[in-house]
Image (cartoon, rainbow, N blue to C red):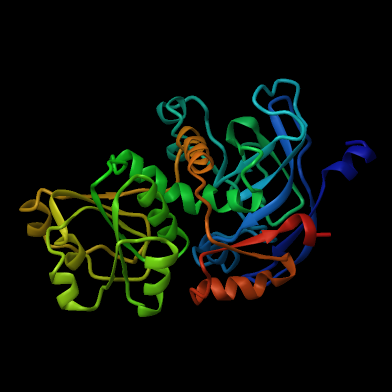
Length: 355
């Protein structure tokens, strides 16, 4: 690698060095742009609970130094000779994965998120053997297939959280035909994912009920996000009043909780989609079978549906509610994510603070 290339590939970042998860400034070298690659200067990166999990080695597989961040937005600075979809100056996003086999049935169907050889945006092992490093950094080099076009009039800081929080709820909502005006949707949990489910539900013309354990969220659920209903899930009477009234439920809660009380709120043949990761799922078979209900899981989404979601948000002027922070505040922000003290997504201003 020539010295000019070396300088060009040097990447500034904030990294966790050990399972304390404490992030601090760090430098590393990104790969050079090859024929199908896009290099982008990162302007913003959303902060996801995944960043907490892997910086703190909660799954036991963290590889340090670890650079988190998989809600990436930025501007193209260089493209490889074979790149068709992007040019220098374009606004682009990168989500939760940066590679896949490109030949299995899932890849062929634009469902790369399900590829057995998929590579996560950070803490993954890429096909060249290198450990991937995420968006808490100055630039990233990605095969064009895993980059998304962000319309130039859609703010980059708003686009970042779409790439994990947004797509995690949009993909199952589309898969299970929740875009039917007049139907009813229940949203469990009002964090980064839940608030996006409410926004999409409203855009689809659904009647939205928010379930929370915290009365403090009532005001914002109804007035800020425009939900029709707010229910304290521990209030037995409020819950009972909604029996068999909902067509769909999206459960974004990751803490352990009972499923049966919510399951019984679905109409006959209603759909319950889980996108959080509680430690176990326990439901009464009668609740499922007698109600002919469906319980489904989901993660993020393939490249096709992710681009559709970005275009949908731009067309319908849907923007996540965000708190923009300098990267110097990231350790405090991650602590606040753990405490759920955020409305509703932190976004790091990489452009103006990482130097």
